[in-house]
Length: 122
Image 1 (cartoon, rainbow, N blue to C red):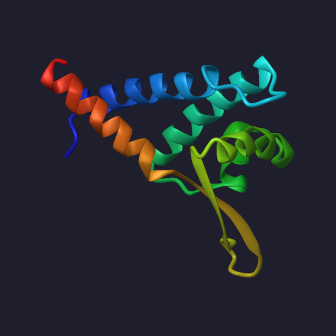
Image 2 (image 1 turned 135 degrees about the vertical axis):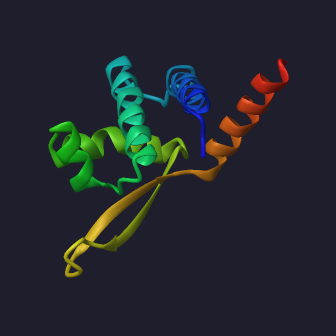
């Protein structure tokens, strides 16, 4: 089981990663407002991930109160940056399709390395 302190450090590392990836590496034509929305969206998505919630448009809309278009607008650049991956899956009712987002595994590898460095005191 992960200790509360480790969860806290993981959250701190993730927040630092989000800021670095989005604010320090702007995409051409991107506004500062768009980058801030992405950082906020990454925070929400990470919290959902930690709670084992599926990262679908519907779930994100339900949690944030944003419209589907607003969520898609914030998530699109995160996919473009390689932070998120997108898969088309069956929706919860099994009849239609849904967009399922996941964090790229490399992100958690980077967080793991950061945690190990912190633990080693480097």
